[in-house]
Length: 373
Image (cartoon, rainbow, N blue to C red; front, side):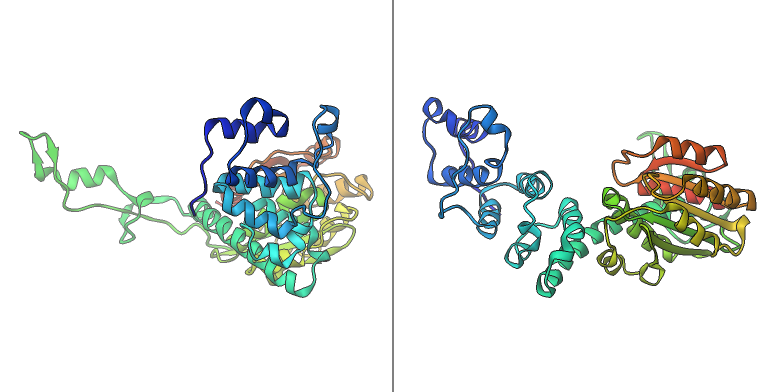
């Protein structure tokens, strides 16, 4: 989609706002429309009054959210559109952006809007909720495309140089054997090796016995990014041979979502964000589903702010570790892996044998693969 490109002076005028009108001059029609779209959003900033700037008008001609979305998509490039939509939802809490059918049919899917949908879907009527699924499905598809490759690479078996492979993929390429097989085609004058036969190494099967992975996901409001990535990660793990994946969401109640693991869109639409947190209850649920402790991995994704009894949580984690389970506590599971968590509770879990950290989904896959080798 093409969009009007303002002059350098016009860009400065758009950046500085109406107070710069006298110094930088007026705007063209397209730039005036862009200025109105920016004013509709950033005119809400309460700090503008403190800086002595004029506040936005509240007269009847003000843009509506659907009008604003249409103008934003017409007037700005893609990276600016995503920033404006993100600020509308996250910075200014304009829930109409994700609860209006007109807007949802026009808006660009993005991770920030997926978060907003999950946090406001309880406000949506059935028609709006159906449109919201488009955002959820598209963002999940993008995450799945990226993470599925990382999971497959993490769980691929070790290379076996004794056996050749017919699977001609880069990670199985045998450089040394390829050179040896094609030495007869070395051209000393041109100093080049002409390769006719590429050699690939087979991989040994890693999982002879079944492993059970139990993902416990805190669905409090602050954990929305981790909930999203846990759902996608579980879906990627679901089809791995020799692996059994269980996904459990919790606040003060525990909900087993395993039946929806293969459909992360449906799973996310069932998650109820917010409420209190009883981590010990979730860990107790996991204890009841451990069949073979020596081959069970329990991943607790939480900020560790326990609303129940922290001592009970520590005792249950200790019992799992002593039984032979491997327990990993994740303070964050998202693309940035920036943790915000109760460090005191996390430290107590480490003392009884759990591992605690913050990971991207790819790093979690590598950790899981390392434990089942």
